Length: 223
Image 1: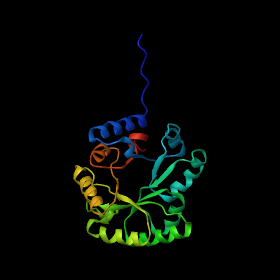
Image 2: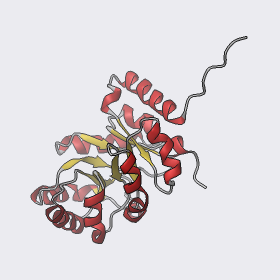
Image 3: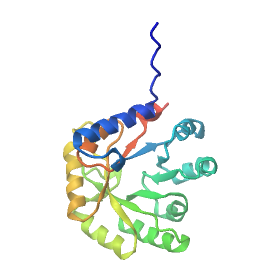
Image 4: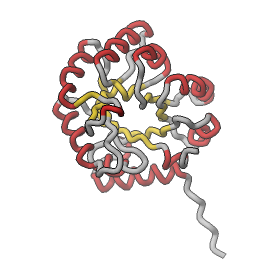
């Protein structure tokens, strides 16, 4: 009787997909960071991924992350936490203390708030500038025309700039928006691109994503 093959975990399947896509794109899988989007997920939901070796996670809200991650990090001190949702200026200091990377720098007032927070905490957290590539103001993000001025402000405030981040419009082919973000990053001398989610991270990798933010494919649909 033939022995049944072990069922792959969602994490293993996503990693396999990243590796396969990188091979097609002639890239190294190690050059793509998988961010497991754990927003709205409980510590019990997150723990299996940590036990399987996933170490980089993304949260949308400072307060939610404060409630569950300090305890998780006691057991997994090498875990890395990214803030991928919009950040209110009055939460800048809390974000600076908790997160290892911020993906939502999108306006001058937040540059000012983060600059003060980094000075006060002594932590200079790498940041992605979120760009509104689809002209959807409700999503946040710096308008494309205002990007040069915002980058200049951030550099003057000694904020470490990691790259650019975007959320393309839903239900539209994302490739042109990913390509635009890549061109903007190249034009401004930024190396990293945070783009691509569960439904389109393969396309994002083909177009240069260095960080993909995957939630549903790892955790399943939200309740």
